[in-house]
Each structure stands twice: as structure tokens, then as C-alpha cells.
Image 1 (cartoon, helix red, strand yellow):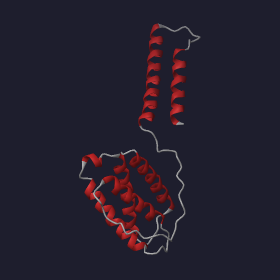
Image 2 (cartoon, helix red, strand yellow; image 1 turned 30 degrees about the vertical axis):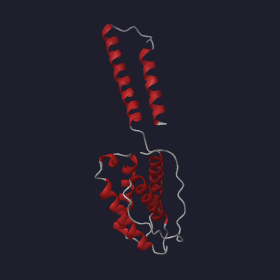
Image 3 (cartoon, rainbow, N blue to C red; image 1 turned 45 degrees about the vertical axis):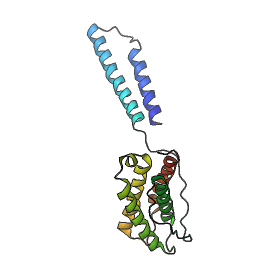
Image 4 (cartoon, helix red, strand yellow; image 1 turned 180 degrees about the vertical axis):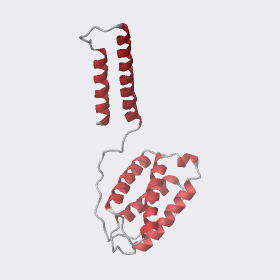
Length: 183
């Protein structure tokens, strides 16, 4: 939407700059008019390329599932030291942790195991430039910081607020796409 408005503004300023003026202008006025046009057209081009270079957050809406209290407690905590497997496993455990509601069975144990797994994952894989440069890693790192920050601030017994859950589910979707592409 923003880029369409910027392109429209650039076209309008280009048309206005080249349209004939009903008044006779002196040579210095014509030069001044050209300079004004170049300034305005240049600003419009810079604004439109800036919008293209820095796209906004994806507008795809992610549905946030309702919180749950009944789940199967995983027994596969820890790393296998194979990035794709570990990233998928940590992401899966984080999705479950994000969906846990107040009063879920073993919620505190789940949170403690989750935080240890997240710390182990980040501290191991951030040392490798090939892994640390992947989009899936950087997005997963961001999600880990959000969830770990929640645990640090509120403890393991309290569920995540709706706004934070929505953001995390959007990031989980991005991570899943990146992992499927091998990135």
C-alpha cells in the first residue's frame, strides 16, 4: 500500500514537472523550475526505493490457537548436534510451551527443560558462522530470546500473554518455512 502511494506521488510529480506552464517564463525561471522538479522527483524516487529496500512485516495473519492444559510431556530433551533436527525439535518444544495455559500439568518442569534446551541450542550453534548466518537461526534466536525473557521475568508457571503468543507464532511460521527451504 505504501509503495503504491509513493509510486503514485512520483508519477504525479513527474507529470507536474513536465507539463507546460500557461505563463511565459524567463530563462532563470525555467532553470529554477527544472531544479525544483529534480528535487521533488529525486525525493520521490528515494522514498519509493527505500520502501522497496526495507519491506514491512509480512501482512499474513497467523491464527493463534487457544491455550491448552492437556498435552503429552516430551522425553526427547537435549541436542543431537545436527542443526536441522535440533532447530525443528527446539521449535516444536517452543510451540508447545507457547500454547500452555494456566494450570497445565508439569508446566514448571516443561519451562525449566525448555529454557535449558534453548540455552544449549544457542550457545552451541552461534559459534558456527554457516549456521549463525541462516535466516532460520536468526529468527529462532529471536524467538528464544522472547520466550527466555518471559521465563526470566514471570517464571515458569505463568502463560504467555496473547500479544506475545501471536508474535511468537508468526516467528514459528517463518522458522518452519526457512527450515523447509534449507535456510
